[in-house]
Image (cartoon, rainbow, N blue to C red):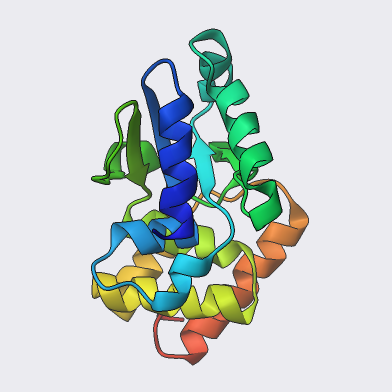
Amino acid sequence: MNNATRLLSRLDELLDTNVDLTVYGRAALLLGYPDPKPEYAFSLDVDAVLWIGQAEELERNGNFWTALEQVNDEFEDDGLYMTHLFDEDQVVLRPTWRDERVALVGPFRRLSLHRLADADLLLSKMMRYDPTDLDDLVFVISRSQLGPDEVSDIIEQARLPDAEEIHEQFGLCQAWLVRQGLCLD
């Protein structure tokens, strides 16, 4: 069993109520596409994005945060974790991200799992200008069969967090995509 499924399956076992969770990052690439790259199975974490107010909703309804803490404690010795849960305004996304998520099928009883849509996965991968995320960008573009004009349209729809560093990294990624011929200037 891959690391993402191990973490999410254990979380599902511990939940006492239904939870809607949206993954992104390498867990989304692993679980959300046929024939993902083998190295995605070895990612050590699962990242998730929460809509505004969802964190508080999860606090009020059920044991999500306690279950999540237990999962992190149980998998600590294996170096696995689920600690990167960000509110939507902390991630580069389109305003319509929540309506366009893709449902993921899994062996889950309480967990209703989704991944970001292709366009939003692409945008989320533009938050860091590093070789791993650039490689993941190419994966999303190729698997989604997005042309340079479509990538440009997606970038136009991006809603960026206020952080100056994210704006800088996003610009570097966009320039790289243009140089690669994957995005229009």
